[in-house]
Amino acid sequence: MLLQGLKILDFSSMLPGPFATMMLADLGAEVLHVTKPLEGKQWDKDDYLQRSKKSIAVDLKSPEIIASLKELVKEYDIVVEQFRPGVMTRLGLGYEVLKEVNPRLIYCSITGYGQTGPYRDRAGHDINYVSMSGIQGYSGTKEGGPANLGIQLADLAGGSLHAVIGILSSVIYRNCTGVGQHLDISMTDCALTLNALFAQDYLVQGKPLQREELLLNGGSFYGYYETMDGRHISVGSLEPKFRKQLCEAIDRPDLLPLAMSFKPADDVKLKKQLQQVFLQKTFNEWQTIFTQVDACVEPVLSFEEAVNHPLFLEREMFVDVEKPDGTTQKQMACPIKSDIFKATYTAIGVKSGTHNEEILGIPLNR
Image 1 (cartoon, rainbow, N blue to C red):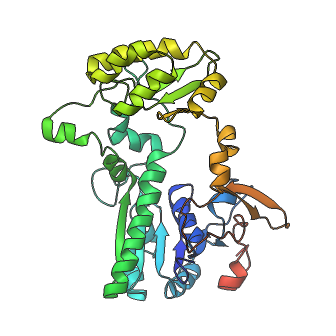
Image 2: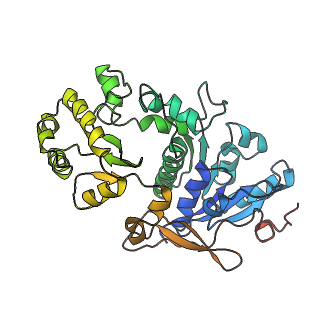
Image 3: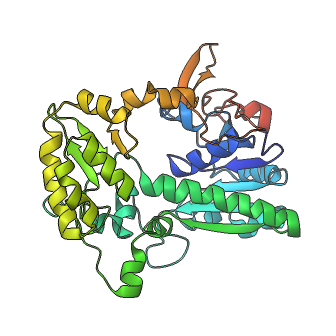
């Protein structure tokens, strides 16, 4: 296991923190999830997000519990928390307190807007973070405005992945120096850096980023095209050889001059032509045609279709994870592949508080 021996105390909830610590658990870290005692049904997403983790459910307002958690911190390498700034400090579990208990501790705080700044105490969700970061300002269409994303971009690509990068970088630093640190992961900061491709257009050239005016946001023929039966095909044929193969595959060699001019105005003309072309065949017909052509043209699949696609089946991107009753549940696999390591999954997320007795020696209802 790549992270065998690394112990993580996880106070986070919902998506960003749990996804980050799940990734670390998949790679072999030992994760203990700390939550409050639940009333009613546990969130069903925790079957996936809390897999391979142990769980304790405790009252974080109890001085006795806080004292027990401080003792636990002596044994752990990393703390992950996702409260608003100041909450862990008020609970008696802030970084300054815990580093006295364990000077080698790596303490990762994931928040919407960071530990400092005018928005530090402000509530938010993924939709707010991608909006504040400028991403949605030039995504979508001029007519329809920004589009709702099907995934949580700032939560995951912003919070989760940057937290994992920060944590593992801190582990390397600690291995070299013996020193722990406090990581301040703002999901909005991280989302801002996802403007990587076009940010310099404004920062250096002063060029505003507008919807449907850039190469990849609708200002060229790069995009999605509706088929005869209301499905969609994605076209990303930007390079010369792909433009040529696109025109040949759709049997429109007359469009080659437009495709090969590389002038923005001609790209827009080509887009209008392609819109009409793709409406002339069904989704399956276009799939059959482009399966034989390497032109950066692929179908827009439903999630159900993706689950059963040969690409992901061959890549073993779905696994059967054991449930408490001995049966299994299908889940997405760890996407990190290695020639010396294969992720293992001990169990789906357990019931909150399952390990109270084992870890703290107290019953679940304490």
